[in-house]
Length: 417
Image 1: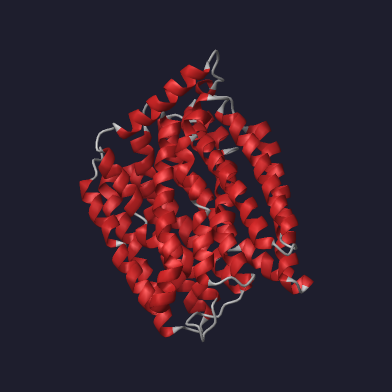
Image 2: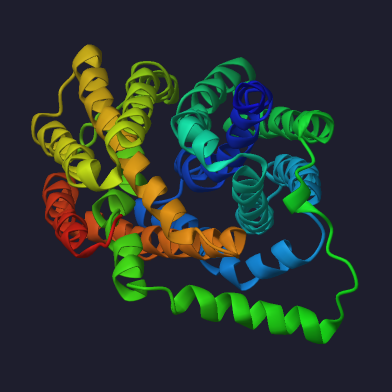
């Protein structure tokens, strides 16, 4: 029976987590590079794109409704079709004179749909797979989610550069790219309507009136914040990626910026190639290794060392800002080291939030966890552009190292079985 569940899981776990990660990558990562190409400043880019985290921050407000109304399977398929429509909207507005306002509006709608999709996917994963299969697939799901992120960092950025060389117009290049992404998500919706299983625990709720819905709504929130060690757990979710939240906004801008401005002067194609090849391979290995070690020895045994492995490689950016290396191989190798550490350490973060979410309302509770995770990325990210403009790249990356320390220290306060 377990073998059959694992076999079936391969037909939907990789694709559904790739579909979960890709719109997030587009909103948070690709938008940063796109707006850099279209002439916005680092401060503007960091501020505007960090605001796009907001739907992931506030998604716990409607996550109980996703659990109460309809099924997770319904929400997954519906959101994938809506995401495809939002991507088409971005493609159509980029050539307009008011592209910034219109594209940001569609980006926000895309973020809202993606956040709702995340709630349903994570809940469906826990409902459709037993606990042992969940642990077995954690490295796989994390790998394909990160593969989607790196598709944004790699392939999409490369294609933007290729289309720009082909059309001679950066606006048209990005517009063509978003049309392609729109078609991809319509295909995802059709595929998952066919391949997703129908777990019994994901059944449609019957005979629910408005009063009952709101009673359940507030009951779910209360049960989350009254869990044992809730304050420590929430603090961990906010602080674990404090340094990485700032680094993720500025690192691609640093690599695209000119040598005269303190950057590395890479092109879109070079940046996409670095993140989408060597970086992808090393991050994948880090995620798989993290999942394997946790399933073998437990999270409590590995979480501290995984945090160190995630944060220590941030020093490569201090070196690159100081030396501004011209060697493409050296830059690629340094980014690969950082990506391996991130993949390895981020697995511990995901497993902890899953463990903390266990219980009667695991779908909504996990969504609340990811809301705090997003808040921990949004607020530092909003300030990162201003800090980088004031400090310069080298001092800013030193600051990043300092801000990784709270996320390591708070691990000692966690209660992990």
